[in-house]
Length: 185
Length: 437
Image (cartoon, rainbow over all chains, first blue to last red):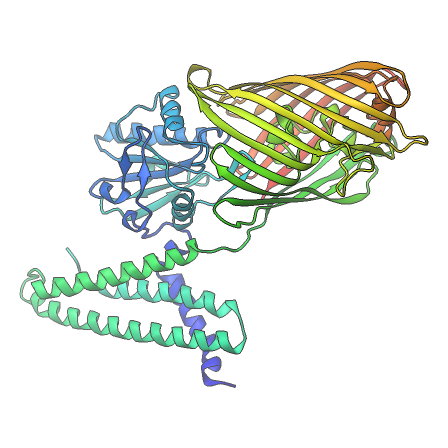
């Protein structure tokens, strides 16, 4: 047997061990630890049509999720949880930028998100509803572990929120299994 | 301030990132070329790890004296090198993330459901647990503008037999955001639920569709699927969107009492044509959609001699779908012309209203549905399978619970009256456990 081939299992085992130990690998597998805003696609438009680059948010804490405007199942629950987090921040006198990236740019353009915000009274200046290209949206979702797929006009997705520190590095991922989302702040 | 602890951690991170790359490569193939390629990549990776480890050791050596002297800040040269190492690590991680983003494999998604019920109106001796659907949904990416969609459904019919159906097989071209042309077998665009809520049980609030909008082989009276071409799109107008659909396909045939969409073409060569026009409101009426729909279809049956009917349907639909409410109403009026028997025209109608409330604990819903179908109309008279062409009305009360993001539990109580052919009435209690994956 080729010596390289003989050594492959051992090398693979070593690397698997490293992968298990190192938080950085979680980024590639869709888990949040160590993901950086600066490494994500940067070309987004907010609901006023303004360009926004995620890297420019460095220096502030960022809370990021994904949603689509016509979702009436999970997204309203996620948005309600973000409101809770906002209230917790307010109570502590702390600040954060809250980012909602659209899953479905073909249907949810900035004007749709503008209406969405307005109808749900989500008018705080630190909340940003972003639209990007389909490619950038998919790339961001994959990098941050947002699993989704489109079924006709629906988007199949879960409920997930990532919290980034002031250096733009993700610190925690919150989901339905998280008992208290505000504890992650 | 950076500490010595951070250097080995970075190296570990780098090693782990590399391990993921290589681990995936190891799993990817076993032939000689792939092995050689993997060997080359491993060699490169090991060299890179060694080089970076050497740099880390060098930097640690620089910092150690400084710490011993009172934890003074790192030298400018040390900081510079450290930045360089960090930059390399970030590049590696970004490249690794992009490798995943470029994944062009075809994920398999779908829906499935199982359930139980106290009554099977079509096979009265059957009751108890049942298997519903296993629906695979495939949408391979072909290009920026070329789209494709396939839906393969394993379904259990009311008599317990398992059938496989290619429910949708459509290839499309997106001209722009306002127009997409699909060719193949698609969900006929009428009403709301036929295109918005199709085979996946999980996706609809209610446990089942209204009886007359059921799939062709499950007792429906409408051409749920069409084989042909379909132009669809949405154009922004005011606060909302104008939704439009135009389609043409094979005229349907009734075979064995079941409406058939003629996957391979029909025997009389006549097409079915139709359209749907709606408006989805925005602003204060956000969630409201109103629309009109209609089609003309020349339908043949398999009697001897063959009956031909020109089925003409016009109707309307309304949807109010918000974070709190889900209301759906659809109405269909038929004016069918007997083309071979000389019995003239026949008017029939069908419709339903379903009201749902999205509470925090679940979604209760109510539905009333009615179909008044002329039995002298050769079209409805020929729909004999599962007694689908009979007139009826049904009251239903249901409840949906979300167990998690991918699982729903649904209950429905229904009372159904069949009002012609063999008048009957029956009560049903059903439960359904529906998932998506």
